[in-house]
Image: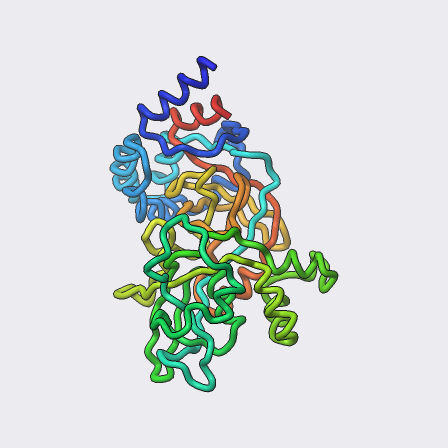
Amino acid sequence: MRAARFLAALVLALGLAPVTPARAEVLDFENLAGWAEDDHLAALKIFLTSCDLIEGEDWAPLCRLARDAAVSDEAARDFFELFFKPVVIGAPPALFTGYFEPVLDGSPVRTPRFAWPIYRRPPELLDGQVWYDRATIERGILRGRGLELAWLEDPVDVYFLQVQGSGRIRMPDGHVIRVGYGGRNGHAYASVGTAMVAQGIATSDQVDAGSIQDYVRANPGTGAELMNLNPSYVFFRKIADLPADQGPIGAMGRPITPLRSVAVDPAYVPLGVPVWVEKAGAEPMQRLMVAQDTGGAIKGAQRADIFFGTGREAGRAAGRIKDGGRMVVLLPIDRAFLVASGG
């Protein structure tokens, strides 16, 4: 009990963001498969895009040192190895999936072709509030309130745009708008793929984003019922002045980067920290990423969603990912041992 009180006081004194208790083990960099072969400078540059937003006073001096180290791969690698320790939080194997920024055709007004709306957040919906579920919203409770941001071709596009959390919508005149996460209705996310397996529609090895979309489009009645089994509903906002060559805005309010940004559960992994990914599967991946996003389906210490980029090819690549492996969080040395001792 005394040790627990001491750790709690130390966390408050250092300004550390609270995380959910989990088993944690401190490693050496030699324990990271493929560490020496990665592009450390590329990872450091992505780390710098959101370093100033990491909670805790101990990060400010590290951010300054990171800027000085962003001159070569050798200096970047030295920076990580000098000031961080790799920490495995939770119990591998991890579950890695992928996500992307879709590019969809749409319209600013309803037409016979574009008849399915995406909505901005209703003004009465408060953060953390449990509101109407997906089925209720789909029955039209928001209709006629002027909350429509755009109209898409079918409900499957709407649903999977919500799953991805951001997208580009190409209007009939060629103008493209960017939309990002604007809030949610407070209900927990439930997987359509899991429901399909439970109902005997598909086996677990057959379920991926593409197969789910194909089934729902081919079976609109059953498909609508399946989508409504997920009570979570995402609202959007327009993202202005975001250059076309930059990725969507992540949970930290900064653009995310293909194959360098990852969505995590912030209850276990602080947003903004470097994360070493050792992904198994048909397309193994060993690289340093940055925890810059979150997602309704991303729950647990060893759970991560890798951002693959924008457009159809990125979507295909992201949809193939459902792999095990290990996720290792890089933490400042003192913080790493603190987390391990409190785990």
